[in-house]
Image (tube, rainbow over all chains, first blue to last red; front, side, top):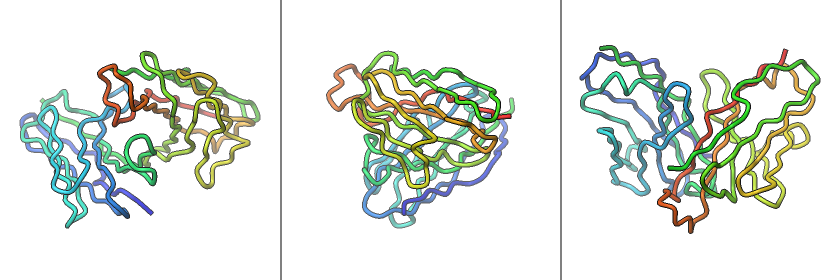
Length: 115
Length: 122
């Protein structure tokens, strides 16, 4: 079945450092891929998404490219800020496809950015 | 934006009691809501899909008689953990999807998540 593997944290960076959080997936068909972020005390929020191969999702300086050949969707940001400290979840659309169906999540990666 | 709330945010109960968790979509109607469970340092695992006006669809391995789901209106779904035991202690998260024709400047291609409910069973 479909599954998501993302790098384990926690990840600790200094402000303005480059961020990469790796995410690989196993899926049949053509799922959509998502990155969700959970700030302390809040619910998960969609950060970005990509619906087909070679699509690049971007938001708030974060980017991720849907790589079908490597089954990856790595999250990157060129210069992190303290306010980016949160837990990041990679996810793909489940068997029903899209967000009207369920999502399959990675375990989450906690990012801490120090001033 | 779309807001999903959960109540309570945390609950502690004795073994054998039942606990009800509410999930509400505050500013949109949701024909479908999802219930997830998260153990420490683990992924969110889908428990069930809650459909307004019909029975919930449970994932394999989830006991439907233990985790009762009621989606009585377009803005409310409830999860009741019956006869709770310590192994039911977990973080329960709900999400909601607006209808495809929301027309409220919502992203209808995504799910909106509640903040979660921490359940501790003693």
